[in-house]
Image 1 (tube, rainbow, N blue to C red):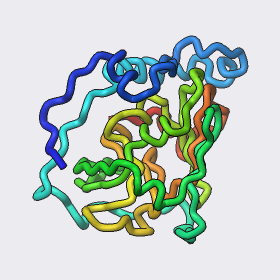
Image 2: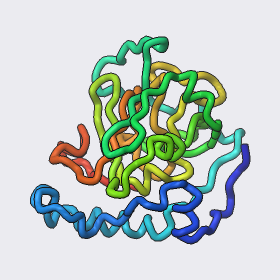
Image 3: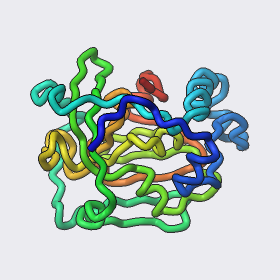
Length: 239
């Protein structure tokens, strides 16, 4: 594990080549379908502006913290409903949607993929924060395995407790966006989202779904964008 202090500067084309997803159209303007435009309309314009600014440097890394700065007790457990009971032997991460290679991955298969660890600040919209070490697989590794179609612009996440959220594909492909199965060097506790949860320094906490069981890659957002987002919370929720 290394402490990141200076962002790695790569041109957008280089990032897309490295990610293996150079065919994906990441721009959110001109989404191309009347149905989508009717649903989102003018309300999406501020969101698009924020996303476009991120897309200009989709590889920009967020400075991480040292191991001595980890705050073991600071991560508050928030639940949407009751904590789901997930049988790890039967668990499968489903990746579907507009992909050429739909996936159904066991945890052992996920853990066999390249491991990444990072120490970042988790920020909750309620006003608290915690510095946490997360370990797992970069989400873009999973996305690349699924071979998304060129049209993909968004990723939907469904959790074992039926929580749901959606991200722009640029944020999903960020090199510090993880599907985490470790917390502070130990197996991820169930209360914190085991067996698999999102962890990223570029999104607020309510975007970092716990107990992730399905990822659906799509070209258009439906009228349902996320549990909290559908109740008025900001959709992009970037930091």
